[in-house]
Image 1 (cartoon, rainbow, N blue to C red):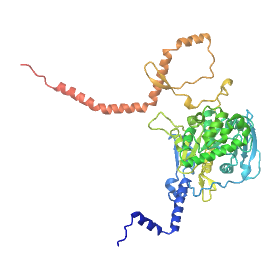
Image 2: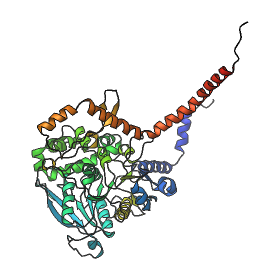
Image 3: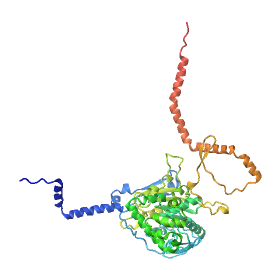
Image 4: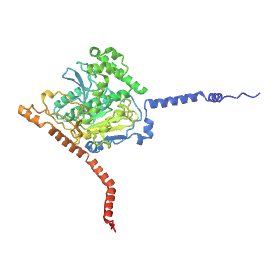
Length: 530
């Protein structure tokens, strides 16, 4: 009797059963290793074998930026390559002790200023900074729920102080072991604390140049402050590390994948722990039950930040607090460092066009005071280096940049603007809410016009008002139209010459044909009538 024919699946199962079980275990271990390698974004193998191609630092800047050509071009670290072999979550922070100073704001809030001076690191002797000290001071703005005890801030403070600087970390309200003593809490767009701290430091140490370093949410606060102040800030230079830039885009990004959701949940737990430290204030000012049930940062902002900060909606809070709209008004030399694989701050929110010229839109000019440095890897405030992750690349890059800037003539110089006392407390609107506006003249010309208010003018008398009344009308519109037309002609001078060149090239054959036709018409013999 013939043997029954086995199906292909039976043959396959028989073949698989012959493979030893330990081989399956090896394959399972390999699959899990590859999965976690990609999920946790370990990249030491790629950095080891593709060091030249994948570890470069990409610099984006205005082609005519004096900051790049005279300062950043001298920074070897920014022109080198990032090597991150093993990721260490603790970061092996250095061991030292801060000197704490409690600063009381005008609204009664308490801000903890933790100092680490150059003498603390080199001489191990705590010396008070005198009013005549000329040592540069670096003001550090921490990230979300971070304070001076965080590992990455200890790296930053110790290495910066070791480089010859005095470092002060301006902890957010309610962090660093300090209680909240007012009804005001910090948020991603709250710049008043860093404004008053910098003003205080300028008054106390007038001879010491002031610089600032912001990390994560602290970078967003710092850039927003620089845009609000413009030329009026006393800071000489600044560095923004891993800024979220656009909080609305970041809110959409952090809910996309499982990995982002895990980060979102971890940060929410940190915010809930921060709220529990100040439960009496949050119970009185916000929705405490909603805070306890929050599952994401957006939930926490909905039940806590919007109530305390008086924001209508969460999206309104994100829009008003984003630093992207203030980038164009930054007047201070600013280095921005971001990693393209940042799991919290997406590269989609980076203001690429604000840092370089768009060749398709020549009218859209980039800010010459900003240099953007990006890397393929680095994560969020990581950039660990070496086999034991004993150093942070962005700390060395920041120190080198600030050191080169402090020795150059490109440091920012504060410009004091006089204004009336009634408008001294008025906050400057972001550039997105200001000019340009559209002006339409009688001839149909549409142009961009920036309307500025003159704060130093006084009310005119009755005679002057009568003269102004007769002067208004078509004459004013004609002046505005002529001025804008000449301005547009100057801005589009290259385009006008290009159009003229195209017209000459394309019209030359037609002109030649016309001349040839007229010449031949004159030379043509006339016929006589017989």
